[in-house]
Length: 452
Image (cartoon, rainbow, N blue to C red; front, side):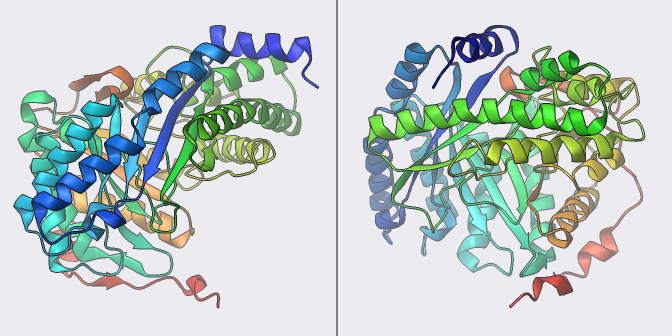
């Protein structure tokens, strides 16, 4: 039974604490669009997306109006295009990227994900061509997002793919140099990528998914921060319980929206991703949650412990609130998208090394990190390899979204606007891992991957 107190509490979360549904994402399979003819393939892709997602935005708007719950983004994810490209060449992949852009414009969505490849154990010639097309694809489109999975705990780490991604990221930064190197903000390198993630830029529609599906990503750092403030000077067990109960309430809102969207669109409900996804808005910051827990600044010694506790409590509360929890689920720590993280970097409290340590206990990884534009390609590969290793060894998803901002140096910043926010340029170690990266091959899977 819903009580008046619960209704008023939810209204307060929305109006005063920035509670929102970050995204409704429709996953669409493109496996039945396959053709050796690039033009036929693109026509089929366009027709399927525009047919299946025709009413996605309209439905999201109706749910917003019905319940008064902000739904920030309506998105689509598709089958990784490297799986449907067949024998098409690089120009054919660029045609696919433009087709995805046209379909996104036609349906009115915010982003479309799935310009992606899964190369954790090796890559075909076609997959290599697709990956090399990413910089041009991202430079020539606005809504298309890309991801590449380079490692899994079962397969190990494909260092040849990581070496290739260093070049791809640098090329994407250069081709979008007139727009703050924003191409790199739409590109993620993964380990253990989930197939049902509703969040961009890493969303794609996995091969184990149904033909279409609705996934919802919730958000609510401000709600958790307010709950912690109300809890006062309690002990950590009590504080964890407060966070857990708050995460339950947030996730129930996501479950409601997911069920409504699924019924209205006659599309199966997939998962609720219960991640705390921050924005640049004041009061909507994961860093401020950590500081509310007792840190003078995010980045202080003790930050990793605070984040581990937060992430665990969020998952425990959220998993009880939804019949299907998936995606990434936890706490995101993107620098540019979090006002508290930006402030911590600017005051010198938060370095890339500390961020890397934090990623061992939370969702995703080194996210929206802006670095000097002249950084060596091998250094970018080293950053990726370090972060991917954390995911592989710990059997968790990790990722890197790094932006070598063309023409920028430490002390500067890049401003992407909107949810992508403003990123201060962070310093990297200048010592080169080039010889290590250049060895190529695969780093073998860890011993604990042998679980059969």
